[in-house]
Image 1 (cartoon, rainbow, N blue to C red):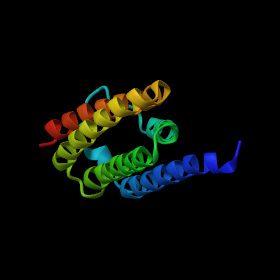
Image 2: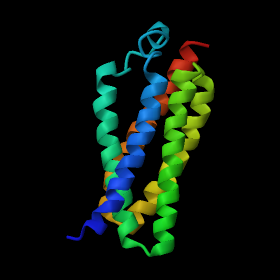
Image 3: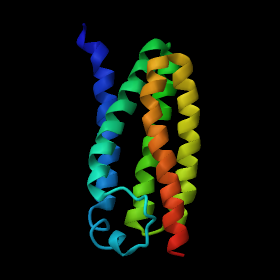
Image 4: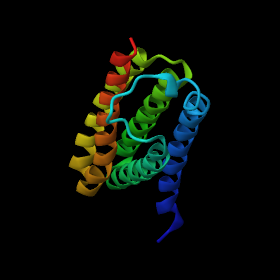
Length: 158
């Protein structure tokens, strides 16, 4: 296959890694200092799970976006790229709000917006390419769980 076919996948992965890096920077100190002091529900996952989970999710979401980007025309490709970048910005912003600024309430409002955007993307991706929809679904489910977790942490620590 021509390398030009794979270049967009590399760019989607690079964008996801950039968003992940912003999230990691925002999280780095708080996860060891502030976060352990919070009351959390019993169903909070262990800290070691977040890194592998997000790595897998960034890979899956990048492949999903790439698959949809490939099947559409130029306008669809631009729209897919914009949606992907927008959700990544919201994804990174959540880490900044929750961990960086220690604002779980504000982060909860923001993650609900992210969740709504992810649903829109899921519907669009699934209509364009069924496999892309399946690849996007774990991310949507994880953010659904994270939204509930964020709400519980906010409620327990008000």
